[in-house]
Length: 609
Image (cartoon, rainbow, N blue to C red):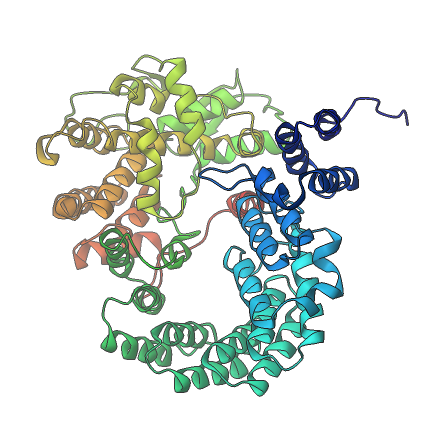
């Protein structure tokens, strides 16, 4: 293999730094060293040049790397190394941890002075514990495998410190917390157990409980967490931890008892409120618990820390966290074409039942030239709107369908391509993300519904375009309708353009667009409590219409509309029962998870990235 003779950027910065050093221009040399450190934080030549700069600057060398607002990360790291060299390693570690939080995954701490056993002897054990706790505060629990290497030097520091101070309770607990995050669960259990034996405390028992829980030893975890409550009965976060662990272990009633105890002490305590709504939804599947949680989040924007309960409950559930996969003969034919490497059937394809216009258009786009015949359309005619509307997006000619509105502008297509996605954390998060479409014209938003742009040249786009264009088209339609929610938001809801347009789409020709428009209305109800009665009424009427038509002919969107109804705030009990029956969901069960295998694979793929 030929040697790459290109000069790396870090080497260029080092050359400029040395030139400035030779000229006595320490300030410019510092700037170039900081730039080199940001690009190659472990390169020996960078540290040699920094050492030369430190020697030239003497006692004031640290001041060549001042800390100020919006400071450059290379400056922070350079100052950290000089502080350590000047005999202030704890201050240096504080800065390295800050750099680690700023740019996780970079090997800021993979330098000899951090991992040498001597450092642990020079540091006060309590200060070391605080530094390890800072590292944990900015790290996921657990840290993904790909991000663990950059934190390994801190774990080495923890090992060295525990060796020097084997009976320091706080240090052992903090070291356990870091080890647990980095996948060293048996080590985390040993350290936390030693910590509580050396110095029993609430935080020590919490660390031990977390370590046991990570190891799947829930009985020991609960015992430790209950001891933590005995140390401090007023720490309601531990009550929530106990409740969560009990629920994971299948003891939901006991879990709710613990949450009720916490709420009796403080009804507004965020951890208890989040856990309570999650567990109550887990118990009976009623979306009202999740809506109440979303309301709490909206009304308490200054919670002490982030919670993932709402997203956890919505993940993978139809319309709460993702587009519901489409079905029907047209979709089946298209997937067969894709599975056969775009091999087209030899003759016309005859569909056993009417297909939504979006399904037909996606099929003929995926397999150009394919002839499609349909069985008798049935009664009522699915090619006609369910109610009189002021705008039509599709034009039927026999069994052929064409868009009835102009194509969107290239700018609108690009804006939507940046946002469209088949999954979201929860409906309010989807609403917030769609604000990026607020300036897209109404005509463009409607055009996007029937003229979906190609999937973007991203990992997501390639998966959707190559394996399931249906999911991409449905994602486009969902986000275009979410964009309608941000159209002329100064208008009162009852007489607004956005409501009027969405109702036209809801009652128009039976199509995937019907589902997308209903989801936009459902999302509006999640975000704006004042519109809930109106949206619940619309949903009840549309659901009843689907059920009535379904008694006379197949309705391809029926199951999806039923799931949308189950996601609707304040829907009447009789409508919820009807929706559960159409969706095949038993009363009291969560509203189904069952996405197709492709969607499951896609969402796992996206979460890994």
